[in-house]
Image (cartoon, rainbow, N blue to C red):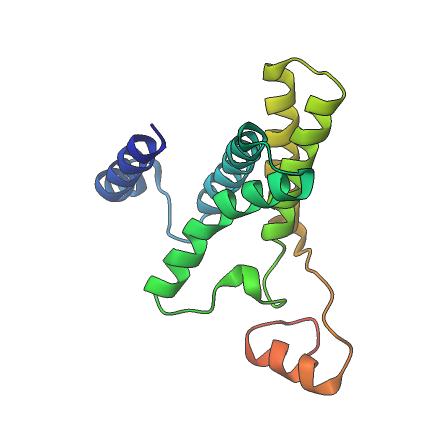
Length: 162
């Protein structure tokens, strides 16, 4: 079912984005794109955590299942368009951390006994909310405090050290 969801979403985006831009006045750099990405992070971090739970792996692995499910598509995208994978660099706002937060929120909600629909909303909301906040407020993970690491970050687009 996930393959079908991904295929349908890809087809809708491929064939629908240009008409939507014309009809609604979107541009390619609109917040709409980041908001859609945040929805994906929220949804897929929960789906990954659920699959980790079903597999019976330890909590840390359940959380990592959420992170991998939510972020690996973006890694493939970045590689295909020949740009550095954003989750591996400190010059980009938080991404994988937001998925980890959403997955862990889902796991905790499950542990405390919340009903399935509520724990899904908790995990989804936590992942999506933190992702939107990271994009909106440029929240990033800290960089190692050396001149070389700062110069490297600046060369990759980090504006915190300029």
